[in-house]
Every structure is written in structure tokens, then in C-alpha cells.
Length: 446
Image 1 (cartoon, rainbow, N blue to C red):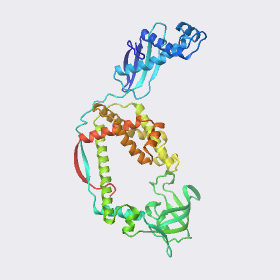
Image 2: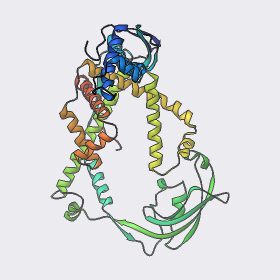
Image 3: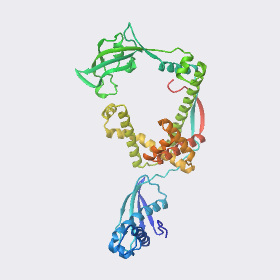
Image 4: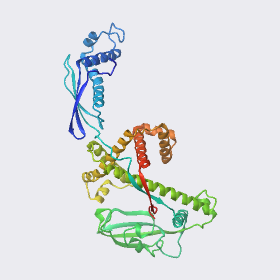
């Protein structure tokens, strides 16, 4: 018998829940004894006993000197994973987590009984995944959209000139200190020094920007506002606040002329007409990408809506934790406390997990469906697929391809990357086989 081969392993299973099974696996006495012999052959090479060459100790002497327990432990450690794997294949089960395993006490000359409880992938019967129908936006770029983008480039290239002889106006950039209080007490986020911002009503609490108008550099003002009932920080909603403001500097953006010097500053285009052509091409590419992304989202919604099957709770819980981790990372990046996020949503962490469950279930269902499509349609990830994805990720991180490979190896390994590429190829398959109707639509945000 070859190592790892168990001819007399039998297994039965039953569902404890729709996606949780209990496997009863029986390893025959003969297979177990063969595993003990393989375990002895492995262990005997690791011990040196007086009077014997390495690896040449008879088993009965080894058992007397080292102990039967060492062989038994090694045999069980070897046989359980192989027997479990064989049972999964026999019953066509795909686990989604590590199993919980119990062993029945092994007696000399008797079989080994293994009980394994594990969450498994649900059975999925695909329905019409090759016959989905969807609309796709046929985006056309207008001259006005090109001009708006050109003016945005011009604004980013503007120089800032100090204002003389007048006070603050809407659109100015002001550097100021401010101290905010409510009922005479400072509040979190209400104080700043040398803060530079554009004076615009949409950047402040209602009424704040308007009360800055006319203030000159070096002037101090007291500004009174009331936070709106929908303000993102719950503790400040409907609260009246006073801000003591000191204006340090007022600057105004000076837009560059639309000439060849400006074109050279912001692009590699030969002239203004060429820059406009480049902008149009970029907007068309952005529009096409947006249209494709929206179409893919609709296809996945259709796919998920057409399939109802039980979801392994462990996968849903993992996805909830992932969503929670993303939210916490975001708050950490912007330097805000986690409690502020919970307060803004008016929930505690348990409530937030409950809110995330719907989205987590949608993601898990979609992911399982894409995996099933990849399996049914024999979609594989090639070396070329991986290299293209690696190149794209490396560019986004500003790293070389080799540095990106090393980072992936040290962190998640290539498994998640391969899974991601395979799922995207499954989405591409859906698009390729869908009935697509072109509809006119404006660019997003226009």
C-alpha cells in the first residue's frame, strides 16, 4: 500500500444545518496498522539508540525504549487528514473552513473512528447565466464637458496671490485660527490653527462662510452658527456654537491664460487643440469604464436575484468582519475616532454588524455564484492573466513587479489574487454571453 493510500476508509455524512455537515469516517484496522508502520519508519530515523545504527532499530525495541504512544500519535496525525480528504472527495463536499474533529479512542486491532463537523459550500444549480439581458450606457462626450475639464486643469494650475485692499470674498483662500465653543465649552474638532481653506458655503456649517465675508487680514471676528439637524456628528446636531476667528492671510487664485505655456505646464500635448483632444479621449475612456462597471453590477444583481440557496454563516461573518475592518481603517486614515463613526450612524458595534449583514450576504452569494460559473465553464487563470494583474497592481502602488510579488508572498500569498482574477474572468464571461442593449446616458457627475 502506498503512503497516504487507505483502501478501507468508509465515510457517511448527514446535514446538521443546510451548509454544515457531520462526517463519520471509519479507518479500518488494517489501514491503521499500515499507518503505524509508516509512522515507525519515519520516527526511527530521528532517534539514536545505543547499539544500533540510525534507522536500523527493530520496532519492538523502539516501542520499548521510546514508547508505543509516539508511533500512535504520529500514525493518527498522518491518517486523519488523508482520511478526511478522501471522505470529502467521496461525497463531493467542498469545505469553507477548517473542520472540528473528534477521535474515538483507538484500541489495538480495531478501526479508528473520526467525526468531523465542517461548513461546506451549498449546492448551486445555475439558471440561465448565459442568457442575461442588460442595458449599457453609450456615453458621448460633449464640448461643454471638455471645457469643464479644461477649466478644472486651469484651476489646479492657478497661482495664489495675496489680496490687498479688500476683505474676504467667496472663492478666496483664507488662512485662519478658530476656537469653537458650545455653552462656553470647547468641543472636539472645533479648534484649529493656521488652517487654510477655500471660503465656500458648502465647506462650512451653514452661515459660517457668509459671516467671514469682508473680514481683512489681521482682523478677529466672532461667528455664531447652529449645526444642522442632519450634521454627521450626532452630539453637535441642532447645537448653537460660537467661533472666535483670527484671519491671518487672504489669497486669491490667479488662473493662467489658455496658451501654449499653460498646455506645456499641464500636459505633453503640442497645443491647445491637441490638449482638448486628449481630454475628450480621457473622458470617453472614463465614461466607457463607468458604463462597463454599471453594466457588470446590473448583471451580478440579476444573477444573485435569480438564485436562492443557503449561505455558510462562517463566510457571511467573515465578510461582516471585513466590512467592519474597512470602516475602521478609513476612520484611522482620516484621523478620526471610531466612536465618531458609530455616533454618526447612531448604532453600537453590534448594531453596525447587523446593518452590514445584508451587504455581506449579497457579496457572499455573488462570490459563490462566480466560483460556480468558473467551475462549470472551466475558467482557469493563466500565467499571462496573473502577470497582467500584477503589473496593474504594481503600477497602482508605484512598485516594481518583483517588489509587488515579494509583498504578496509575505502577506496573503497568491491564493486571493488568483481567486480575484478567476472571478473577474467569470464576470467577463457573463458580459460576453449577455444580450446588451445600448442606451444613451450622460457622464457620471455631469
